[in-house]
Amino acid sequence: MSVQIHALSFDAKDPAGLARFWAGVLGRELGADETSVLPGDDLAFTLQFRQSDVVKDRPNQMHFDLTSRSLEDQEATVARALELGGRHIDIGQTPEEKHVVLADPEGNEFCVIEPGNNFLAGTGVIGALSSDGSQAVGYFWSKALDWPLVWDQDEETAIQSPQGGSKISWGGPPVDPKAPKNRLHLDLVPSGDPEAEVERLIGLGATRHESGQAHPDGIELADPDGNEFCILTAR
Image 1 (cartoon, rainbow, N blue to C red):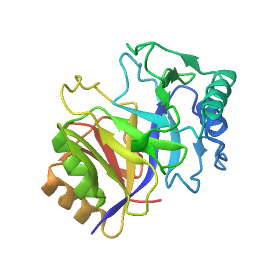
Image 2: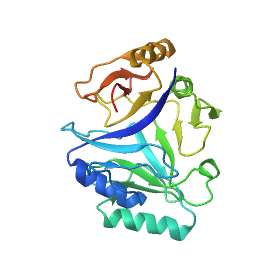
Image 3: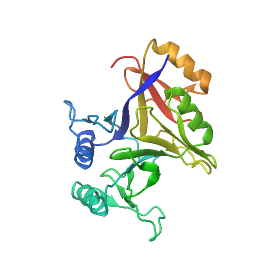
Image 4: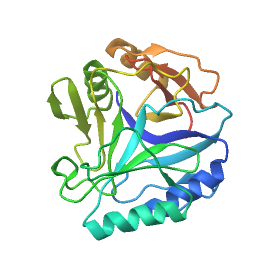
């Protein structure tokens, strides 16, 4: 049994508007429903935006780190994001740091990383889905997705598909208190029977979970840090 990432789902007040923003920033095409951004060569999963009235009252548990080929490319990405409705935000970064911290039109944080970052080398436009989380949750997702650990030091972890592409990383302690419902979560598709996959993931440390806003064709679970994700029972 195994699972693959089908989509990263965002809660959104304006799903179509947020989809247009991210399609523009990433240079990707919109899905037929105009509330999703299709995968690209370097991004193997869909970005899905779903209607929600959940209020954003804290930094997200996940955010994108976007890569840059050059300083001019970094500046162009920032300018494109601002033109599409993004904004600069202050999360405590220092003037010496070379990455640029932005938020999309609904306040979802992301970073545009300077060129030459070795950790993100060869990953594509979305270098990493950077996450607040424990070492244990990094180990869980490595086993859940069958992605090897590519970083495991000082309780910081990162995994990457054997085929390459975007990494998923966790920053280790201290882990911020979890929101009642994360605004971003992963939708996974099983290779076989969904319930059998659910039991496998529970054996790895997941728990059954009910947020009230699960995918309509999905079984909601939570990882060992309590972060929601869904096993889809229909594509």
